[in-house]
Image (cartoon, rainbow, N blue to C red; front, side, top):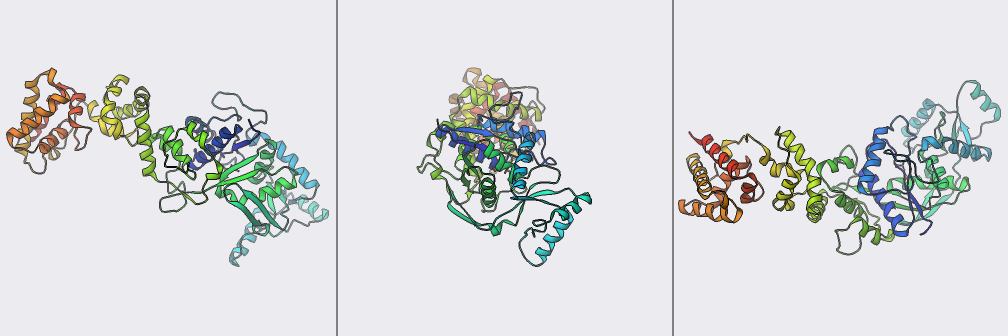
Length: 495
Ligand code: GLU
């Protein structure tokens, strides 16, 4: 055990973002690797955008990924865990108020009476002059009489923290020495709004200190916030935690992944049938690697190998194809029963969409696995692969029934001849090892290319030109239904 304490601090203003999941994972891995504590804190002070639904989505999916937190808020019927609660910022407002009072008393902060309109006008003036946005400091030196006058006008002040000049220096675990001039921080910083709610920068510092956070591991998008936080930690007399900024997650074209242009919600990946093992494995590789060729790593493997020293600085490219490949690898590794249980809802969705009332049993799904397991980049692909098994009235496009080198009459003859082979052979020979030579023999005898005959049969039984292996598909469909579909397709071709 060490005393390391790390946290994930999501704002419930959207569903769990893959970037947040990656940050949560790295914090989790660090905590588990060193025997520290992993904390979940909800930063819900953006009241207008935070919702209970987003909160639930975030907690549910972190839990689904297996990133169990040691301390965190009451959720999903479970009580709050940990001695540093409450773990929701809106329930901690008293702490922020007390901390703000301390800063005011020490003149490290001051009341700011500027209205939103005044600040907007100030910003526009700077923009027009092509200058970076920066608070003018108008309220920094108000006399008590001036403050009283604003109060008398009914203005309610925000609280601003005085940003002292100087260079803020820190040693980032990923980026090494970082130096940022306080002059670049935009001037004195609002820490509490006029309505009393804390701003992110303030809440995060007060809570990280109060919760004893030793390492702040978060996305590089926060790098420019860190000097503000360090100045606040110091002003409040708190120890400054160690920082580690994780590389940005980028699209293939190296643009920043944004929720508008990229698929970023964890729930959308889950809905497609990415399995948790693959998502965890993939997220871990977004900015970190073992330094070896090893790619398939379980959560436990990752805990064992994790090392902040191996986190990369450069942007981490999100490559969906690689994620799909990893997903396929993990799907191959799952035990039959486990995989069947995970596939069942996807297959049920497919059968419901096709309006059949045949819900496949777990045993039926297990029986299908040998022919589909290697063909599933995502679990949802099962619908396309085997949906045809569960339709009573297969609707087939007659044009597809005629392979390129054939005409309709040949296709019809081929389908009827194949049906005759099946009928003659009987139930006992309706097996993969028996069907294949029988149908190849038929093609040879008639001078057809086996591929053409097989294509016509494939379309007749499935309605599609691509299926799992043909003979396995026929066996899965059953002799009677196969025979009936061949007959029906032949009818469809009768001129
Ligand atoms: N609530 C912040 C966010 O979601 C937390 C950032 C941090 O880890 O400090 O981005």
